Image 1 (cartoon, rainbow over the protein chains, first blue to last red):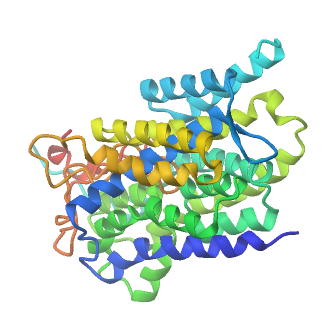
Image 2 (cartoon, helix red, strand yellow):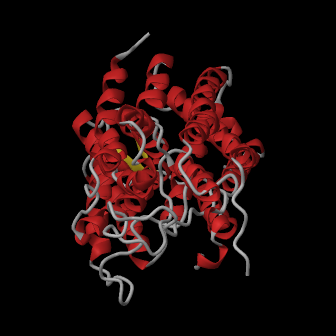
Length: 110
Length: 298
């Protein structure tokens, strides 16, 4: 059983823990410049948006090259986005996305 | 108007337990999806998946890590993105710091590892209802509502996912991108976030097609915010009072600290400062303004 990624987990934890602990130990450490705070605030939407898009739109061939992929996944993800925006409930969005993809594939439509 | 009565510790913990139920379900559901993604997409071993959920214990970064590992992204880039994704924990920690002033340092260090969106929202609501610090309540909230369900569900998702043949047949392959997209929606509170997300999407896809899919997310995630910063911020809010977005998801995505600036979250923050945790994807977090209903806005 591989344990290689345990090292990665340790590194990822090592960069996460200070953010959780420092203000509890060293008051005032959170006072970053406003522009840095503004940038950091935008990282989440940008990273998650890129993750979603790349994993929906792009497929990678054996040579490691990316190609556009069109399928029911686009509609499923869009449906999830719409439901989350409307109902503020990711669980409902995921159920709808999975249900749509499963239904379309069961009917051999996509 | 009379001031609301301060509950006893027993009463406050009973309310905390009720609040925790929805959080436990959400952490369990999302942990299951993480375990499934780790097995199917990231090709983690069970030990590696458990290590992520216990050592890192941060949902967004864990999900991002699955995709990045699967695409062969170099570790330094993964670690960099993780740091950026999770640096907002500074704000949760800073908001709770005044309540922890009397807590021994070692216990504060332990408590810090368990600090997630859920722990933050539940414990802050609990402290405010109670009008004082309750370290036991914090650990109950953090461990029982989130840490335990998240880790057990990670194992269940990992093992359960391996029993499912052709997961794409059941649409399980769309869970990951749909979850990422839904989480991104939850982080959007204004034009800047929309532009940053749009730029991240466009840049990520373009880089994946034109250059290297392994670095596409990193480039999109780092450059997208720069594009977002080009958009003027909300009028009269040049200092970015909304440090983190108005929605939250299990294990470390974002929680609203409405109308609270970084300076206000510093050492001078008095217990009872207005902090408004938003709804989580699978249910609602408790209302932290119970103790001071007249103080809540937005």
